[in-house]
View 1 (cartoon, rainbow, N blue to C red):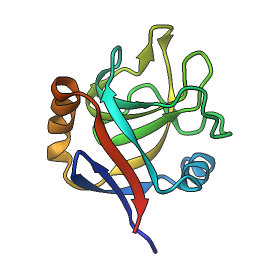
View 2: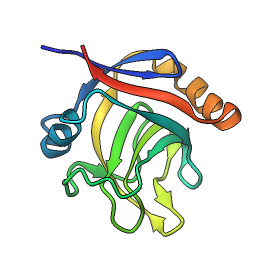
View 3: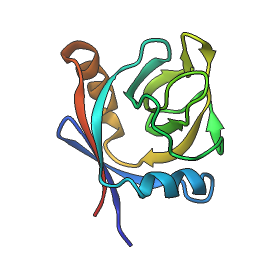
View 4: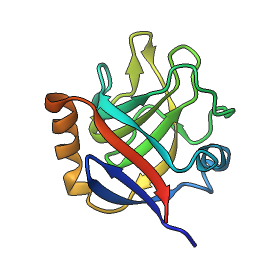
Length: 137
């Protein structure tokens, strides 16, 4: 079985897909692997970073959705009243946009190096966009 790894700003995190809780989201995202992008600090949601994805359509609806992801949880907002995005919580989060509260599908959980998450947030806030890569190894 392949292991999921998420690398942000050259810091590697082991992770797991939440296949039982969000099977459609996991399948849609897994089809995109390896997935690369840039994270930036959120504007309205609190202590999190996000990957803005514009009108990208993963073809999924809500499943295992939350507005309050815990540190290390990654959610996919499939679009609707705001643009499609992937969000990673590193601290307290109330997921929102300028349109108000949102909910995203919790589909990945980081399982290692959680103590390094605040550093990711600091880098994105003070140093700007950071590289992110999702891959199965």
